[in-house]
Length: 254
Image (tube, rainbow, N blue to C red; front, side, top):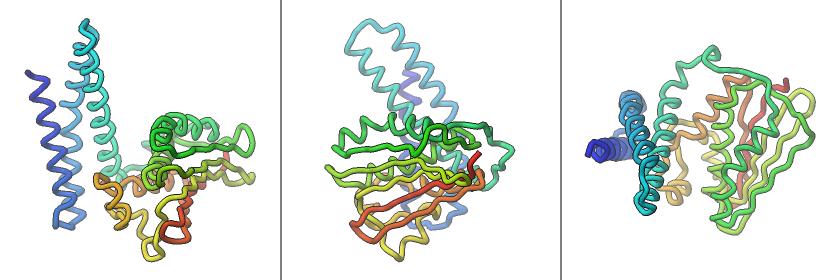
């Protein structure tokens, strides 16, 4: 009973966020204040749901109930991930490099890890995902967790907005001074008038909204905020509608 109450409460709050973000109230300050409060309120009930489902799952012997609990745990994890994204978004302006955990890392290994985690999602949509690293041991100084998130945003966007049967090419290159992670898709492309708005908070093109009706328009904004804290930048190119897009994260080489 406690578990059900917690689940319904979280679902209700998610629905409220979804409605307000898409409502006629366009004030970013209102959205930020609301999402900041709610996202932090998520953490306690979501942690309780996680603990309860894991406890029930470990003690369950009925295969059918066990499968349901596993599905519930997966759905709860998606909410935990969403909460983390919302908190990262609302904290991004205030966060500083001091809050980042920088370390020397192999960018090829990092990108491959993210790409491998999304292989099934690409396969289910029949999109070919290729990965190429220019040379081994392309080293950068990064916060690995945050950079994984930024790369995941680019890959998930490419998958979402690329039609069935096409391809997405991911590569890592190094010119000695700069390291570039490039994600090139054969998707819906970007109209010239939208190019300068791509990294604005809550901005989504009309084509993007028609394909993914559940998006919040914060992924690229967050990715750019993270990359800027690494003294890097994100570049975007597109020849126009239905001509695909290429996003590149460019960072200083270690």
